[in-house]
Image (cartoon, rainbow, N blue to C red; front, side, top):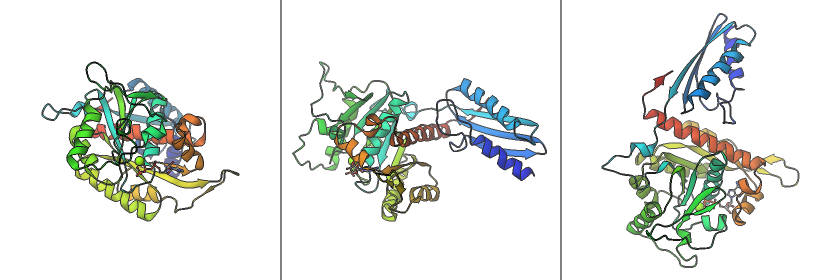
Length: 361
Ligand SMILES: Nc1ncnc2c1ncn2[C@@H]1O[C@H](COP(=O)(O)OP(=O)(O)OP(=O)(O)O)[C@@H](O)[C@H]1O
Ligand SMILES: [Mg+2]
């Protein structure tokens, strides 16, 4: 009986959402424990947020919905709030950040090329802006920058009197790419120290201003760019993009291992090109094995941040200078990217909570 009530409580909590987030509190990992003894239920919530008022309201709502379950007379809800401290706040005097006004630097990376890093980075950045955050997108793929094409920008950035480079602004985010300054037709052969110098300029010489998130689109693999970045700015974490095939997942593991080695937390895995959506009938087919990203995330003890289907509309968005979340903000793909964005916000907050002792409310 208690066991069934226990399940009933989890199920009910699975329909409760935190204000401003579209997913339920269970899948966000806010529910730490549920115990039921007789007709009394205890729910333990652990939430990393600055929004203390909303968290208190949520506690009341949880109490209300759990007490409405037949067989439960009383619900006790304990709430633990953790205050996120950003990686930026952790920068030390000995190792100052090149971009002190950026709260969270998030890398988008993969072990393998062509899995959709740039597509995910661009749509993730815009989705975060659509959720109300101040966002920048840094195209750190010095070998094959894609931000100029994806955002349809071919101009050169403006440099002000103080020699500060002004980022472009489009679709609500600030943009910078080496592609804006390097000739598209000139093959660039970069060696380690040049990569470092170029990236330092993209970070330090650009007037990013105050940002909540700076999303960095990396070249594939585990090379100099990732290493430089992790040394020059405190990074909130890395999002690993993978396709569902086993080989791609194997490469995703390498990417994961690399970030862990340089002490950058891995925020989780996004499975891109997950299923094929028929443009005629809308039916979804798993061309590759489905669920691989989720399995790998569980195996590697990292979060699964969401899946993006394989769809020609997404390619079109990338080629036309108007990413899909802008072209079709109310569509299902935009919703998928929004969910990834919310998961990233949550994963960043969870990472930051680990750097901070819990405060109990
Ligand atoms: N979900 C998707 N559905 C369909 N096509 C996609 C999807 N995601 C990405 N693509 C397409 O796949 C190609 C590669 O994507 P993208 O450039 O984002 O990958 P990448 O990992 O950044 O590549 P690189 O390693 O070369 O930087 C592009 O043509 C893009 O439009
Ligand atoms: Mg790319």
